[in-house]
Image 1 (cartoon, chains in turn orange, brown):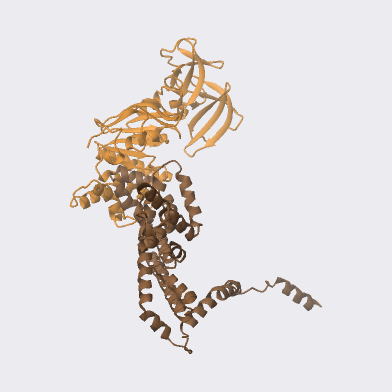
Image 2 (tube, chains in turn brown, blue):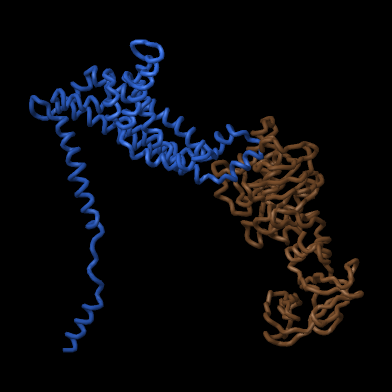
Length: 350
Length: 289
């Protein structure tokens, strides 16, 4: 089964409304690519274009070397898992898993073995005789994954597969998906999500989408540590974005000079300084910023402070404080020069 | 004095006397008895009172022995079964198209189904008469074009005409519950089935049809019972050779004034309908409808 996906300037429009705009993206064989973005960003449309449920207005979609743009969904050889599981309610678990193989005319003698194999892989072997209504949400999702894997697809499409699960189950299923991918290294996975944790945990690369366009694409580490756009910095990791003016080896934020690597951003230009909240410290240090506490949130292991500095609200995630500051207190925050990324003008939002 | 005060207080704390639940059942039961059960009982009573007087099952023996009854029973059953089968096939296909194949005006068509249900059966038959009747449009166009004395469409006054009219009229009664059932099917199921390699035919057979079975059973049972009791369509097609049980009741009661025989046929008709309803309930409970 061919693997890998390639979008070649794929656009999808409903009437005059473009919902996917000239997407160029390649998912390598065996790679997990997360499409990350808010609602309406075009990520699900991109997945549906691969599945064959939407026809591109222009551009081509390839699975492996095969141009599948004009092929109906049943000829594409993909596995698909959706948010609400979409198990067939009148079929038992084993029948659900066997469905794709029967549709693809797999020899009858092979089917029971492959059903057992897929159910084993997802830890659902002992539930083969149950109906979907007799399973929990997490179990149903495992069956949905087993059903998709049973046809041995080269490409697996996962459309917000964990969104309907509670936080604990979601965390467990993330681990399961990572394990499955290790066991099936040849399967390319396109994983649509709006949850950055899922994307950061599971993906080899993340494609960040917004307003029907691809904004950024890179490894989780690249996108997190060195985002190229404000949107990426904000959506992946909810970074502080501070408007600054670039000087020589430093930037000025309000009346404060901050030492950061200005890279090739021209002196005198306005730019955006990106600092992750968990890299901001409380108290004196390099690049100190003084401000007034606007809000304090206790999050168990951490405290989040919102501090108004020079007209901007700076977020700081701090290990749980024994005596957290009160609202209205004057505090000083700081961050290391190497923990800031300067986003020059013109790279703000693709 | 003190004890009197206490008594009054105790009286105040007492909850108001409770009305027994069965009291509320009396009005509907009385109405049902007056307007339905009593006339039905009269029909049953009449069916065991032959013209010769007394009470006996002689009218049943006479009716069951008559060729006309056996023929009417056979015609009724085959017409009802045929029309139901036709309605199920046609209704399922049309409902599939309306529910799953997007086309301009699809919603309007779905709404028209509701309106169609309110039409009287004779209206549909009348419309068919205009099109396929001996002097209808189709035959008129044929005779105009060929100069022939009469057109080729003469089936409307045969059992096939009745069958066509019944299928035309009753198909929406199958479609309505089917459309409701189809609207409950998660389209993601169909998409996933398709992505797993299933062609449209397999998706219909293996995913949609099983989930629509209760609706099909409900619509089919309703149509079967309605076809068994249908009178207006048979009358309006003017199919002289087609005698169904309701038509036999009519001819026995109105044309021959043979009330005991008419009542016997009516009782048989009711028994078949109630029996079918009971069968439907048993089957639907087994399939979990």
